[in-house]
Length: 176
Image 1 (cartoon, rainbow, N blue to C red):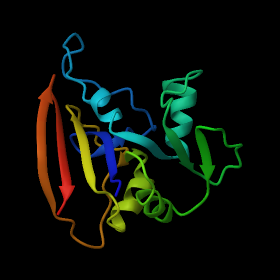
Image 2 (tube, rainbow, N blue to C red; image 1 turned 45 degrees about the vertical axis):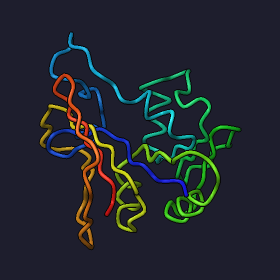
Image 3 (tube, rainbow, N blue to C red; image 1 turned 135 degrees about the vertical axis):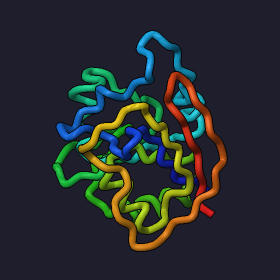
């Protein structure tokens, strides 16, 4: 069975975007320092990307306008906006929990939960995220979009890996 993987970065105080929705603070402690980026290795393990509308919109208008960065992966954008789907990008208004449960039973590689916070929180509430791969950025924002909201139940995890590079600490947990 495929696994749902939350692969995301957050500030030390738990925010995935600042109070204006920006992510330009996502960097290591030394701008000239090299970073051992795990993205390329991670991308080989997934073939499906799930994201919310705000994440999609930020990618296509701000982070990578004119170039779809998830080429070769099937992408589902959870939204109520009426957008025409393409071969690679499906705009769906379906319940994300039902979508994940269905996709887990399909053949293929793992499923990447790309963002944002509301999507991740809905999946966490239903315990549908199998692996948490979180890069902790050496920045304290103080406000913004919080990754973790209050939960209805405790969620015990098992640490699989810890890696650091240029002040960024990557932790990988799986649910127990």
